[in-house]
Length: 386
Ligand code: SF4
Image (cartoon, rainbow, N blue to C red; front, top):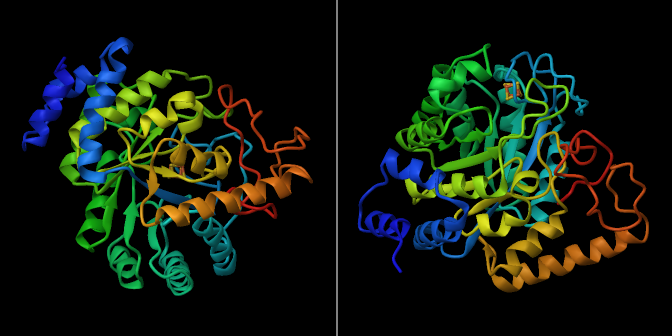
């Protein structure tokens, strides 16, 4: 039986485009039609990306201590979340952390710093880090995410070899002032424009679960389409204790899949990345979500811990995906290396600082209840989850 979602996919595959009404209908599809939504959006995913998954790795260059008040953010002014706080990683620390992610299977390194925006000296640091990374890892893609850009900074990043710049719009323009008051939606759009004008690939996405309506989620996706973002990270709110959004739980796994499918229908040929909150909100539907999305972060997030990197990779392989840029034998070897590392860790504790004293690979974090604050990787002496 051909469903309305199949007809929508047919229309898009024939050169048409989803309308705002189509997008709202996807968000409001009953859960009994979830697999029809996934099957139809999955046709668009396979048309443009086959069975590949792009694997990205976050390096938090500077954590916490931010003067901005983004209400959802554990690093924001006024946040009481007990996240790691540190100033800039050195070039060598950055290389070490990025190298762990690249050896772990990532092809893109996303270098992120908290703060309103970079100073010219901060840009100097990122320029130096980028050139060291590109020298050490042939073919690595570098994305910078440093906040609001001033004139000339994007050009300097581009000249240094940075490939992409991330700056999320986060939510609809009509909802933006409800989630942050220290900068405007226009400020964010301006920075995306500066990145594009300098020739950097624009990466911009959103956070779902911030009290927005269906129409506002659709508004945000159409804004990203208009901005022509190449990569669209879709975050699901992680309600950190100590932030204004603590105890805010608006999302279900099926809702999250529908949001990703809606993004695929609206922006069929763009990289749709499942970003923060993947494990907590999609839970057992993570692999289903990858039938419509085509990109993930490996391992940990900026201030919270993701699931074990081996679990990420096994999920991809178990579901018939391949890592973009890696052949199948390389992927098989990578999984074997991770299994060997996990076995070695199991003899001496899991290496995580979860404090549970578990003696084997973690699986017991209560991801459904609370974000697990990151205590490994960048800014610590504990091995990265990669
Ligand atoms: S999202 Fe960025 S700018 Fe906003 S509070 Fe967090 S680190 Fe600062």
